[in-house]
Image (cartoon, rainbow, N blue to C red; front, side, top):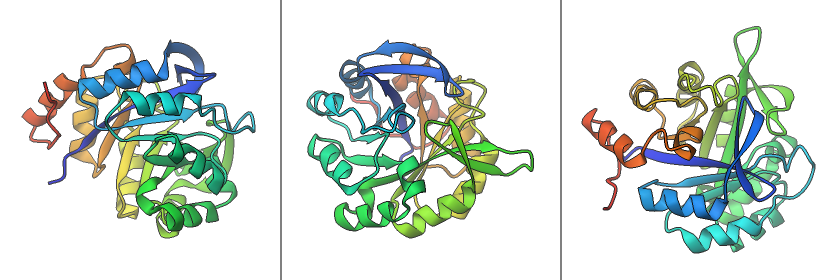
Length: 255
């Protein structure tokens, strides 16, 4: 079996890593390059960096931190936020990122996924979907950092993203984001049944059992979390030991 990946998520605003709840109540955490190196040294499999206000502020992603991160870590990392053109892909990849995450830009222009996949390979193209359950019990796609409801169906959009050439999906539950009450298993189950590409679960991790439950009860390929790692509530090495004890395959941490 392929190893399940543990991925810290670093939300970046004005050059600093921040964290909030349900995309609100934002608090400062640390410097991106410093925190990224720490996670790399501690055994994270990958990192994801999001410029969380780029789309909402209708501006390009702040790229200064990308080069610094690339100098400091030796694991793959993904960058997203405000990515809307092929030139954005070029700029970010040139600075050392391994993958690019698209969200709002892909909703506005789905062909961005297809074009980027053709130019850089689908392994570089990650479709990030911020989803929230509606009154009918289905999931809507939100853009601009969770601020705007597109009223698109999240499951159908995930399937379309795969068809267009996305190599991976990050599925973030707005309802669960920062709440530390567990991942949205219902949403993740629906998504993993709808697509064949790797799915990364995001939003809701609060304790080790949340990671275990998600990996045992859904078919996700990776679990992403932020605050439990940022505030050192959960150690990545201890989490991997626990997952291994539960017979969940993980890459061992090098001491």
